Length: 227
Image 1 (cartoon, rainbow, N blue to C red):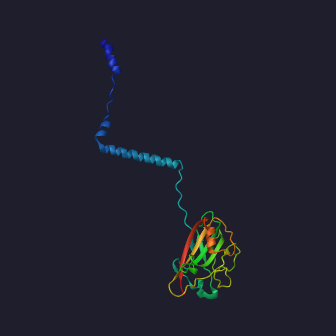
Image 2 (cartoon, helix red, strand yellow):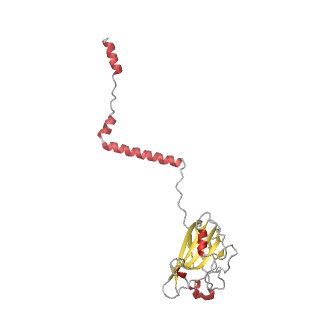
Image 3 (tube, rainbow, N blue to C red):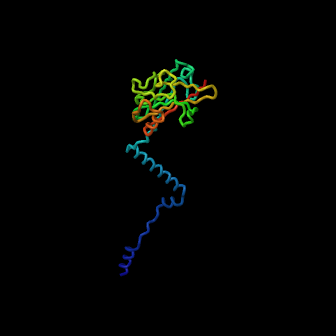
């Protein structure tokens, strides 16, 4: 009976596992604890990076370069040369215009050249000098001296100007600010995802309204001038 009772106690008495020497050192030495945690973190990070590379996780695409307009004839923020102004008289020509980084899906361009200072008839609109629309979306610029005409051979349209002091109202009108403070002339280029169906006598306000909601990108060039 005594042996049987002793055997039962051994069977039902829970065994206590002794902590290893390593565990005692881990608990006794916090610096070793921190070192092992750091090593474990580095190992997990390395495994995660390797897994991401092997799985072919795509990297975020770099943003596309913005639409950029350039005028070789004068630098942005400088005086407009006389050849592009009313000082040239009948020999006045429109400047060469270049652009790059055209956004995908561009079907046409709109170009607006205007003088910021005047407010004709006390209105909100300033003085419009030149407006073109339906410039082909695959074009990269305009040559110097665009000819007059409501429609050009490549499908580009020129807006009729309110003040017609040139042989044709459908043409470039150079800066002609009076003596005194400089006027700021802004050339705006818009890339559109559509072609515009507009009448020949369209106004600048109506043209911009039609372009609203179709502008993929825009770029600006500024020059100043006075006589």
